[in-house]
Image (tube, rainbow, N blue to C red):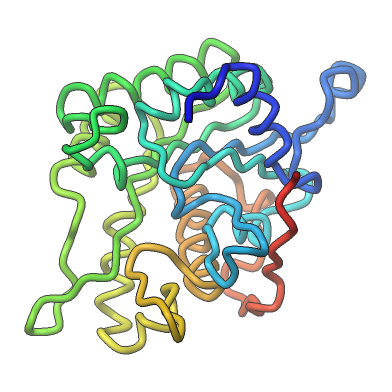
Length: 267
């Protein structure tokens, strides 16, 4: 189904949980202490999930647990999107229309960019993928916000010897190269998540992914998995000095899975 830009704008703004929504422009101009919001542009691995999808959980749902209250999260990640389709549907326009100087834009794509049989989503790692990512970088910078690139979180895949294996081909390397060339902070979630899955092993990783009685999903997370990946993201935001120690919290604390909730989707 084809959506107009106006429909995309309305749906995207409605999809952001109210507690994590950015402050209004009037309030922002009225106070020099306006919270600096972290916007997320990405795919289903980061996206907000609703009651009909539980227990599937995007890591963007858990990221606020690791941030101070004056660092709110506006999660615009959407299931099934690539760096290309997110732009083509007008979703980047929505983000850039809301983002303000001093905010952050975390960009994580590749899962759907890899789908070579779908021209609406496919990008080639060293050309069109980098070209599209550059639009996020340039758009954020033009509005005084700070772009942050995050390599795609790894799927759960092991070889016959029990070794966690990468699944994203050249996309992480292409993003790393672009980040270096454009001098953009890079969160290497691909490398860190692969190392985590290796540490956990074949069986224990099942408790981090959306494995249920009826589904064996090696791409999407359940609450413990989303919390674990969000912790990696928060630690990388600190390591790369995108955020300061005063911006983060609970990096070494146990986060109960019960903190995750799935609201009803807006009508």
